[in-house]
View 1 (cartoon, rainbow over the protein chains, first blue to last red):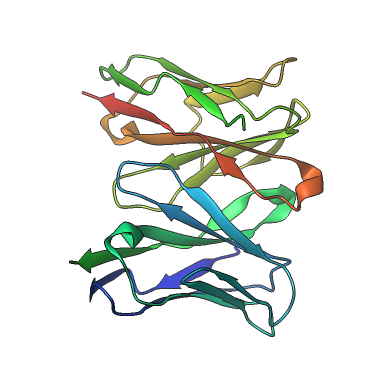
View 2: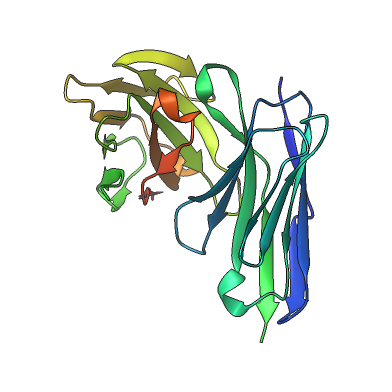
Length: 110
Length: 113
């Protein structure tokens, strides 16, 4: 079945360092979505990418969708302690359900 | 803006008991999803409803059932609870016209003891 893989599983960085998480799908995606989940919280929608090669920015966050629409990345520049959490990518399966990657948990040392 | 409302937020049940979780989707959202998230795991899709009809089924155990009512709220019923059912259960909703952007509720923590 359709799978969404995400690496790395964990990342520890010093505050101010950059961070990147990568997402790969076993199938071509119509779109990809990114969510952030703080410890003890619920997944919060960050962004959706639809077009091949699309790049979107939200302040220090840069999201990319691959040309083949099978991979995506999230890059955070100059991490802050508020960036701590687990970042999930998710692609739509049939009937609209989301298939989540395993998530990348980011820890930021002040 | 209104969000997805889930209740209860926390519940503790004993093995073999039953539990019911409720979900009120964002107004005008036509699809409701249920996800189960174990500790350190990604959310696993259980079941979804579109316009009150079951639209997809994932890794939902036979002991679980769900339905969506005429007012669009949904309930997840879990019977013969097992220790492994302890997890965070999310309800999410979306509007078909919004390219399936899904918005999650804050979740219901179920602990089975």
